Image 1 (cartoon, rainbow, N blue to C red):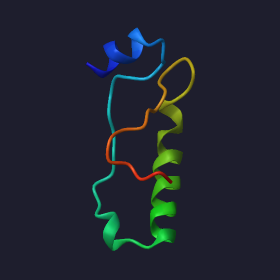
Image 2 (image 1 turned 120 degrees about the vertical axis):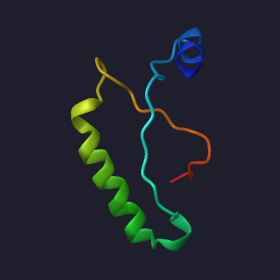
Image 3 (image 1 turned 90 degrees about the horizontal axis):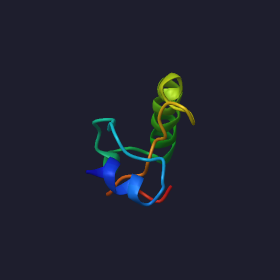
Image 4 (image 1 turned 180 degrees about the vertical axis):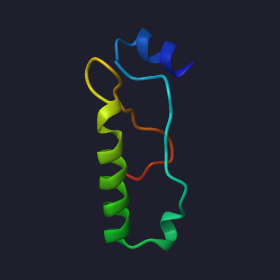
Length: 63
């Protein structure tokens, strides 16, 4: 459904989902930043303008 909705608005989002299982309430700011940077680094081979564009999702912190 996400893919259809984004396509109808002309946005290149939608498709697969990914994430990290953790409880951010028990993590420091530094731990959250390190986790985010590592996750992004691991995802680099799978994202790009011609492959996939990672989209924000519900429940994500503004940072």
